Every structure is written in C-alpha cells, then in structure tokens.
Amino acid sequence: MTTSRIEPEAPSHRQSASAEILGAALEQFATAGFAGTSLQQIADAAGYSKSSVLYHFTSKEALLEAAIGPAVDRLENVLSGLARLRESSEARELFVEEFIDFLLEYRLEVHTFINQGQSLVGIPGIDRANAVLGGLTSSFAAGLTTVEEKLRFGVALGGAAYELVASMNFGDEEFPHEERRSALITIVSELLAPIQNRQTTA
Amino acid sequence: MTTSRIEPEAPSHRQSASAEILGAALEQFATAGFAGTSLQQIADAAGYSKSSVLYHFTSKEALLEAAIGPAVDRLENVLSGLARLRESSEARELFVEEFIDFLLEYRLEVHTFINQGQSLVGIPGIDRANAVLGGLTSSFAAGLTTVEEKLRFGVALGGAAYELVASMNFGDEEFPHEERRSALITIVSELLAPIQNRQTTA
DNA sequence: GTCTATACTGTGATAGAC
DNA sequence: GTCTATCACAGTATAGAC
Image (tube, rainbow over all chains, first blue to last red; front, side, top):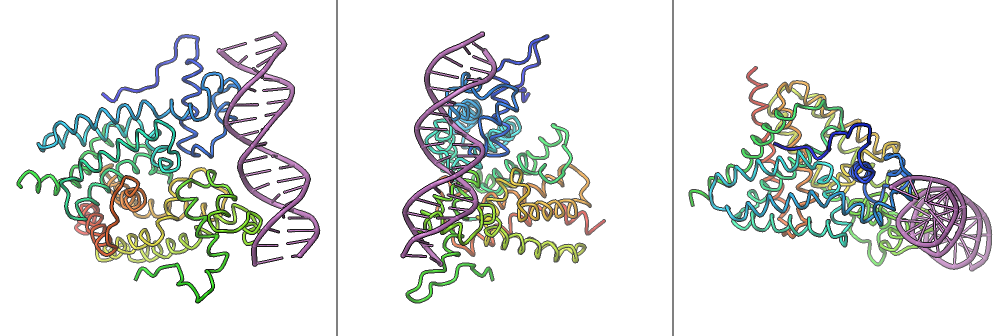
C-alpha cells in the first residue's frame, strides 16, 4: 500500500528528464512557494538549463499544474468514494484511513496547495483542488451544527496535514512510516468520534 | 483579554501611514506569501506610492520584520511562562488557553510564518520564531516517548493554527469569537489529555 | 512625508545553433 | 533534447523635487 510515485532508476539511465525536473520543481514549490521559486533554481536543482525546463514544460504555471495534478486526481477519488457511503460509521473510518494515506503520499503537493491555494486561483489544478475541498467541507459539514463540531473537523484534517508537512521543520526525527500512519489514524478518528457518535445515534 | 492591536481611528485623521502600510503588507504576506507580494501591491493596497512605503520601512525585509516582530515577542512570552510551570496539569491548561489566544490574535502573522519559515531564514524575526518553536517542541516533547504522543502534540498545535488560518478559504462562515475560542480550547485540551494524564500519574 | 524619475537586477519566455 | 543568446518586463531600491 501507499505505493511510491518515484520509480527506481533504470540501469545506467537517469530518470527521465521530465520526471527529474518535476521532482525538483515540486520540492521547491513546497518549501519556497511558487512565487519564491525561479525557473533557474529548478533548473539548477534538476541539473539542466532554464531553457530545457521550458522545453519540457511550456511555462512555469504548466510546471505547477503538472506537479500537483496527480494529487488532485487522487483527492477527487478519495472524496467521491466518501460521498457515496456517507451514512455508515465504517465509511467514516475508511475515509480517515484513505485521507491519511493521501496526505502521506502527497505531502509536498498538499503543502504547496495549502500555502498558496488562495493566491494561485486561475491555475486549473489549484482551482480543482479548491473546488474539491470546498465540496468536502460542505458535504461533511452539512450535518454538523455546532461550532465545536465544525472546528473539530477542521482541526482534525488541518492538523494531520500540517503535522505531515511542517513538523520536521523543528528538528524532529523522522518516524517510521507505519507507526506514523497508524498514530495519525488513531488521533484523527478520536477527534471525529463525537461527530460520528451523534450522527449514528440520531 | 485578547486586546486588539488595531487602534480606533483618530477623529478626522486616518491611522498613521506606517500602521496602514504595515497592515496592508501583513495581509498580503499572509495570503500571497512574501515572495509573491510586491512593494507595488502593498503600496496600492495601503493607498501610497512605492517610494513612500520604502520611506517608512527601509526595505521589503524590514517590512516583514516589523510585521511579524510583535507576534514573536508575544509567543516568546507565552512560552517562557510555560517553561517555569511545566509540571502541574493546571499549567498545561493555562498554556493551551494562552496559546489559543495567541493564535486568535496573531493569525496572519502565524500564517506567514508557518508558510514561509523554512525559506526566509536570515530575517531576524523569522529566525527568532524558528528558534522559539524549536524550543517549544523539544521542551514539551522531552517527556513524550511514543510516536503517537509526539504526533498528538503536533496535530493539536498545528491543527489549531491551521484551522484559524485556512478553514475560511472554503466558504465557511465566520464564527463568533468567544464560541470559537472556547471550542478550540476544548478540542486541543482533549487532544493533549492523554499526555497530561500519563505525565501527572508517572 | 510623499511623490516622480531613474538605475539596476533578475525574472519568465522566445529564437535559433548544435 | 539541450544549450547560449537575447528580449521585454517587473522587481527592489535610490536620488531628488516638492
């Protein structure tokens, strides 16, 4: 599970140039921001020239689009599954797991989106992600009446996303993948438990 | 409590130019990022010319420094209080309240820092904030042994910060201040409860 | 204290040699 | 497919009029 997107190196070839450039770009976008990253930096990090970068991707925006597109696809999948199974509490458990797995797999993409989703409207992938998350919030929050319930939802999802993305800024060690995954599922499930209980008994 | 930093307008005067510029800059930094904000945008938003902005603040970096400085001061205060009272569980309750109040009062500053703290090292306020938060993590996490406990801490603080800063991106209504405050305190306290219990009984 | 005018640097992007 | 050379432009910052 949680299959890695990074393919192993082909013998004596490097990864394809596009993939190398894309990886470098994503990392820069996530840490320095879209506006804070120049094509030159991306080119240097990937080991190509600026023009080569623009040969593979027609513009800086196209590069961002390609970088976050797959993450948005996956997120749409996770959430469409949720919509169908909204009523049962097992469906919620499943949603939490899938969401955490999504975060684990696409943390850089999530980081770039969270930090810049507001200011980068117009780029298709960003707009899609905004729409999807807006839909998630309203569909999930439809049954939530109190302020505390809504905040609970926001803290759970935002906290998980933030933890995966920013905690290591401050000298944390890296945790083993499985341990981190199951701990996050426990914590988020616990946070959402009061909501589930109220809805399944009502 | 939670005294506002924005002074009421003086009769027939506008706010001082510095304050207007600073406010506009902070809002832009928080939403578009430091690199994504130009002096021209700040000047336009504040109703001055680019050169006027640079008269009041000697550089763009100085503007950022002035914008987040007070927040870092306050954060240092909150955390130094925590260090002295680390042992009792009431101290932890108090810390949660103070931390939430800090977030409520300085959400824009926190947002700019969270999103860009990695890439803006070298600016004094950013470095101070990084140091303070690093200290918080290690001092608080010193007694935390399991991965789950450490993640619990990260999710709680990150989730609260994220919720205050980004939830409204997706069409949420604004909640009444007191209701939001007490709900967040409840949620964060609950998240940290297992840690407190283990430590106070050990 | 605020403005216009200007200098200089680095950016995203294009054209064309290899 | 990758590079060098070049362009037009936006960015920060400075000088000086008012």
